[in-house]
Length: 88
Image 1 (spheres, helix red, strand yellow):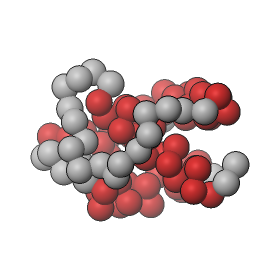
Image 2 (cartoon, rainbow, N blue to C red):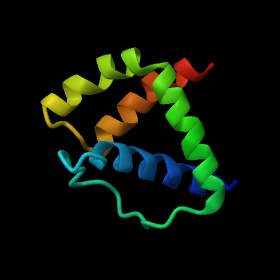
Image 3 (cartoon, helix red, strand yellow):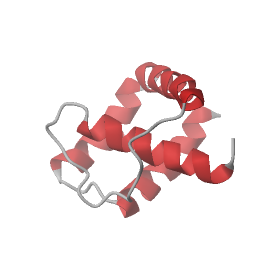
């Protein structure tokens, strides 16, 4: 997996999760292709499992951002720096 592909996957994953219920839209997200390669389907399943296992902590981080409508790339970068220690 090339580095730029991983970055694209993370952005696509977050965009899909934010917009999954058609209640929210990440209006200023970076432009991405809607197509996801088969190898990323497995990675997405793993990410969903990670999200499920850490749902409480993720909600503590994400819900205030959604309520304040602060869904932008700068916020994504901030949240990703918080989540990285959770994977170790």
